[in-house]
Length: 351
Image (cartoon, rainbow, N blue to C red):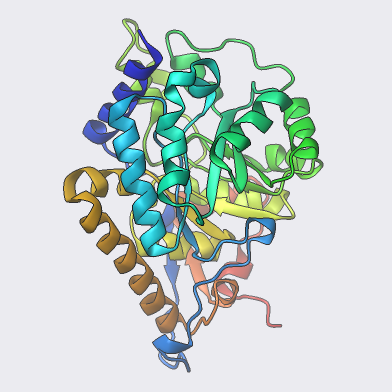
């Protein structure tokens, strides 16, 4: 099977199978503030994201690239929507374009359509320093995502089976590049232990990318004769992964994995995320509503975030963490068994 055909299969399966809604974000319930003391005009959506310098707390996360003319058109649409709404955008893995120059246009189109925007490149953890530099130059990337996808590779019929040396390669790339490096999972979550290991490198940010959104084990199983069903419910749900990352990493933490609306995003911020990436929901909006509809959805998401922050009395993303929220259900059980403190969510420390 060609790489382009496999990329289109990924997109089509993602659209048809949907998201499993197992993020545990519904286990977070805010304590209502009847006297918030602010108005909608007082709210600032600009997040604190260190070297990433994001202007919006949400961005279009990696999903497409290397699928020929179809993904080129989709990437062009996403780039125009990102430009219109002022949000960052990540491309899908650029390894296809490093191996086949004919695939490059499906990535470089993003920079052509959005010349001044914030764009993230993307490679797998098997990449070399040379490949990372080339990927950044290919699209004039403002940062480089390196994705960790062990479970996806194991489920993929033609996937990798050896994963030695990834942390060392990540460290070398983070030291060599002139742009920030972001480490992300592909929907199975990053644990506190992994976050702590990454914290010892020069990586600028990690994306928790938890379980509960697009399930790449399910997608790859559709392409297998003998399915590896045990991987389809494997991973750390998004809500728990955010807390684990925040506990283990001292710099910027991003949230992704099944975020579908402003309520999900605001809960992710309360759990410790500095910004949030959305892929599956934006992809569906793009395909079903077109470019104008996607732009309206993103503007609506920004408006909803302002409404929610006003109700919480939070003028900034950072202030959301001082808003009391009760943790319950499976998320509470997970955090307690992992030895992670939970009381501060319901009774935040006062500055």
